[in-house]
Image (cartoon, rainbow, N blue to C red; front, side, top):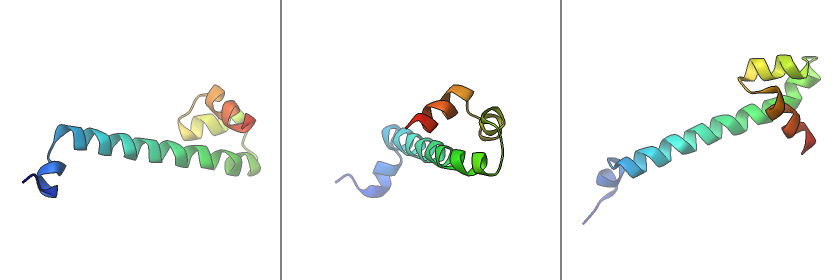
Length: 63
């Protein structure tokens, strides 16, 4: 039987876990955009601080 510990060792599991972590980090960055803008940062400064492009920040603001 293929147990949980064996599953966690598979490449598919490891890749899925990394993708999930990366997506979570991205969502947190997107959540911070309005906070940083409210604190007075410009769109360009916000993008730089979060490691995003200005276009990504603007797209999130349009939502």
